[in-house]
Length: 327
Image (tube, rainbow, N blue to C red; front, side):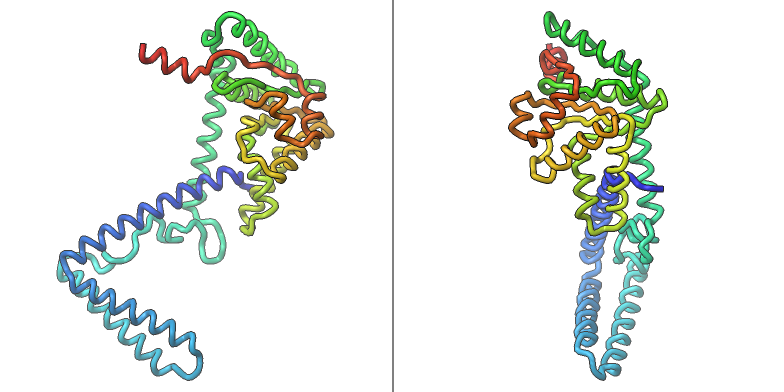
């Protein structure tokens, strides 16, 4: 099964956080034991000094077998003394070993043969389930989740038209549907309406990809530059889905770091999907002038000529919620 690179990255972040927490616990435990049994600190210091000597001997090459055997013997003796001292003070023999949640991979996520460990797979599946749940929740609420009560006067009239056009886009979704540009300031509901559209089209049986611009461009970048074969393959699968799905919702265009690579990736997305007659909804806080200043002229021209703009107007809903909460 091809993996979603974004979800895999999130799973790896959770595994890294788990590993860091285990390292902190191991250090806390070590400090506690050393404070109670100072001789254990000395034994550990002697053992690590022997380990350094062993590595130095191996690095010199030549006939060092007798010295290596003697170093091995002394290391085993120190370990035996350490375990005995731990038991004598009421600790298990491995109390000063590292702490890990998964003994198979030591919380690395991959086995020695390069296969993904079950612990990382489980974290990935949890991320996948969470992502699907968030999209499903938007779909279950449907367009009713888009509350026009947050808009007033002329702004409400504009948003009623925007919502009506979004509903019509879903009802008539087909090869002759328009591409859409959701355009307006922050906090006006673009992301919510995009999720509603994505979920409704998916429930109608079409393939859908919902991506933020930053995550989509990261997939293109990882596919091209990653040295990790698994990550590159997962990113390649995401890129294929971004380019080939029936509907792509690309959220928050303009919030990503602008580079020559991201500009090229956006042109690739827009141009490839238009040529294949696959539909795209792009949301952005940028004005027409800001789009023109930020992206390639070819990209801006294609969006201007091939996308219907749905305008978002009003006051930042998040700010309004805060105001009403503290009244």
